[in-house]
Length: 162
Image 1 (tube, rainbow, N blue to C red):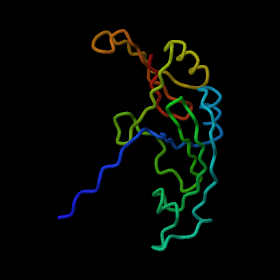
Image 2 (cartoon, rainbow, N blue to C red):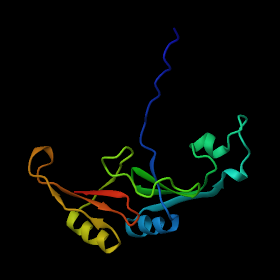
Image 3 (cartoon, rainbow, N blue to C red):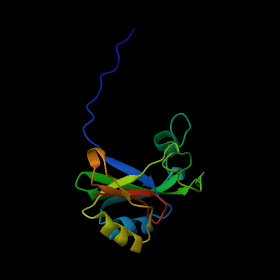
Image 4 (tube, helix red, strand yellow):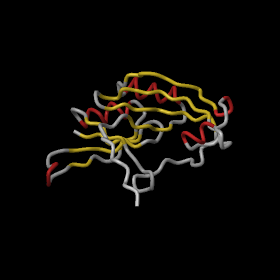
């Protein structure tokens, strides 16, 4: 029996990534409204313009798991310790028309810590976000805190926390 491979050191989170329907609009929101800094862009990267792999798969299928893809991405510095990648796929067509709910497989949200939840709700709502009801925590280790789930202008879930 062969030995198990050695475990690498997992050092930090490098980035998170969301697919967006319109990269320019998403950059306008996340840079202009949230305050992220654009670090770089790549693309458009099109599988049709790249050599096929030795096994016949196109580059995008072999490397990102999406056959025939054409994409453009931007890497943002969201906070001092978090990079945020936004990706727009121009092909293939999206298989789903709705984003997953928190309870669905692949469900997700981005939690953003703010200095004032109420001020954040007013600001983000004025910039196209939709707020759910504020959660007031009265017991346990987070007693006295509050948070709110919001949808960004593209339907992604944000959790605003104090």
